[in-house]
Image 1 (tube, rainbow, N blue to C red):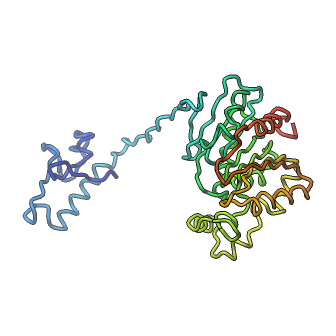
Image 2: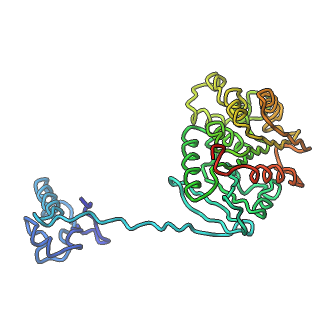
Image 3: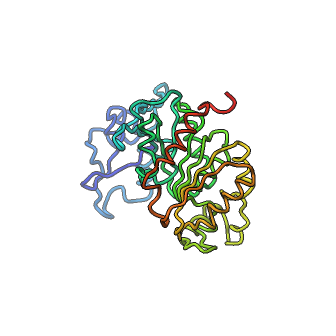
Length: 340
């Protein structure tokens, strides 16, 4: 039932009268609207003729009757207007960007001028507009590689985010993009990339991690030598349902933990990390160094590029090594996956 409303003059309005006055007059049992204009019952304090509880009840019952269709008068509910399937477009770094939504989250894909067959693509999990010239993305676009992102900021690879990432990947594949994607993980986005890849190694071409978080205990936890972030640490504990630091320490699905890493090694996923040796936010010793050693011990292939920097700037002054890594792997694999 549509709520009864008031107009700007504090009059009691029957909305059914506005919509269908003839039907309202015919069906209203007390003829509340019959022969009158909708300002039916002006509010005049306790002297109002409908101020008693019984009178109010009578009026409400009468108004309710206005919304009950007569026998044989029932109609099918209106069909919602179809939403446009066409994505909005704008420009991103000189290329056409197609915007759309997945489960209410903003997403986009940038189209190269001359796309490669099979529509290979990269997916930046976080900070997609940061340091792009230093991370090789424009160079990949120039070579025909699509580039995509879905916004789900600071969810740190929690289960809900992984489900959204699954859905985004399905949407991209349904649009004709390659099943296997190159993942770009910047800072905390590196943790998100690893978490999803370790669940879906068959859908991944490579992981390029730039100063990537590999262990939540290091960042945002700050339980080692890193600065950490108390606010983000509490946020992480809430996302993962940890009641204490001890519960967080018992978590064994960090990016650098051996079991999830072994899934990537078994799938022969190549890894590239670019790290600043002076990084005090995501210390190399607590993140990339541990992951790299374990991955190599598992038989995995990882390249680590060190440069004289802190956590920022991400990328390299000359990103050519990053471009060669990504482009080489994107153009040398079956985009449909290893079983095709």
